[in-house]
Length: 109
Image (cartoon, rainbow, N blue to C red; front, side):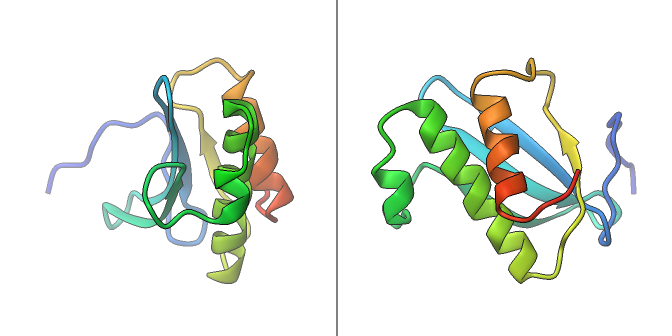
């Protein structure tokens, strides 16, 4: 099996938290690169969103809430430490808000 070339590598014990943003939405995934599997994911897209994400007034507020919800999902799944992969985006604005929200949710990186 051929492994994808990534600069960061996540394991089951410490998965990689990768973030992607489009013009309207933000997505976060916890990835186990050993198994090539997505462990958890969260975004502000879909019909069944938590109320706090729906009520966000700005995209930065929505990013923080998505990060916080992913952080709490991870902590509930007994994942406490991750490797943060900002996917080439600058660490400011929505990416920083997402990371801060994930830390508020209980993740360490």
